[in-house]
Amino acid sequence: MKKVLPTIFFLIVCTVVFAGKPPAKEFYEIRIYQYTTASQEKTIDGFLEKALLPALHASRIKAGVFKPVTNDTAAVKKIYVLMAFKSPAQAIEISEKVSQDKTLMEAGKEYMEAPYDQPPYARYERILLRAFPDHPVMSTPSLKGPKAERIYELRSYEGPTEKKYRNKVDMFNAGGEVVLFKRLGFNAVFYADVIYGSHMPNLMYMTSFDNMESRTEHWKAFSNDAEWKKLSGMDMYKNNVSHIDITLMHPTEYSDF
Image (cartoon, rainbow, N blue to C red; front, side, top):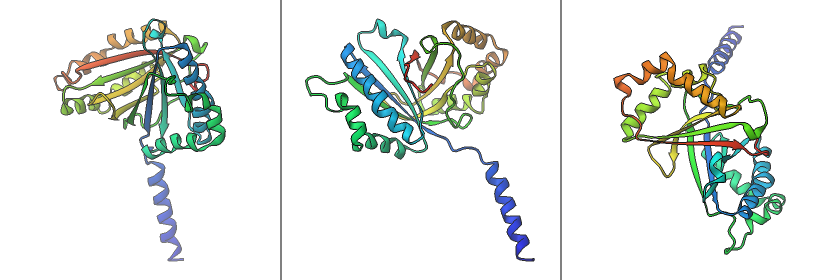
């Protein structure tokens, strides 16, 4: 009986400790495909829908696929793909899985075996990110209405120095900016540090809305919020962003969210 009690006590302690343990921070990959022709767009869409997403789904991973609202007028158009992984290694494994699976290779043949003089894209970029502690895992937003009207807003904030950049990250987490977005119903998908990318130091986050009108109303509420005015007015958080990129996008019909 004396040996049993310590064992039971140990199991109880472990249960309490691990039950209260916060979820591990996810890693995200954003792929940005650039294209100039309708033929390239069709080829990329086919590869994503019939090869990459099935490979992700086989590993129980969802992906968001988006096209900027400005695609209609842009000379170089883009397709964004957002994926969540447990580790950077898993992101590499998914790419290898597509190239090693005969069924997926056949499904994405037009893309995978495109001739050198008819490439399926102009270029593409891959960005690796890690989730913020106050939003450690990706959220699938609950939006209403047709996908064609939904707006996903991807924001990229660059810092003037690494120290100032870390200050902006702190503003999102300890400063309460993530909590503020949640209170105001921004339906955030993720908030994350850019670990590897072409613009550093850099953080990115994505919010979502039922339509453009909803997006306008939410940002108006945000800018007028007393808590935001107080937070943004603090001297400790001054001058921590040097450049902002804002991309408004619609999800494709085959996007998981």
